Image (cartoon, rainbow, N blue to C red; front, side, top):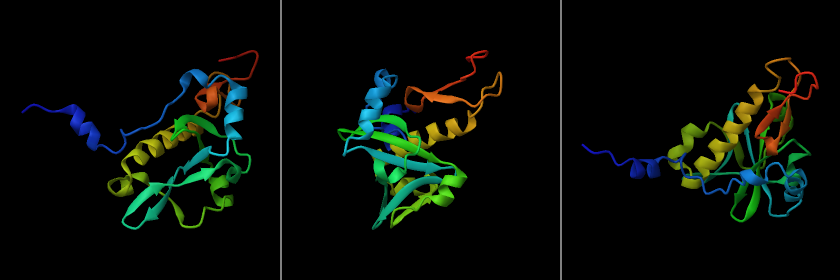
Length: 166
């Protein structure tokens, strides 16, 4: 039996990622900051518990939150989605207890809702949560123990210690 990997990938809700990642722009700090003041910019929110989703009848979709609703949080730049900048915010347990979820949205495990989730939203939510999870595990330099600093729109952890500079 011959396996058609491409058609099988199309059925996987986590592989549908209609996002221009803009990797070449991530080091342009001023540009990324200017994206945050774009009125069309949105944020995906996730935590260790899951991703912020909204039920729409029999389906779910990712809850896109306006930047001003993130209370000055440290955001990571994901890229451009639907002609607008898209950021992610990975809530710490403290942030999650403090942050008031938008009415009708719930923080939930993405895997439970994949069959009911809009196909392109699964990949976006998984990417945002994966980046946030990685960041939560890279808070300190592995060589010297200093707190890491995020660069490249949240995609690179750097040790700020002049002695270490890993």
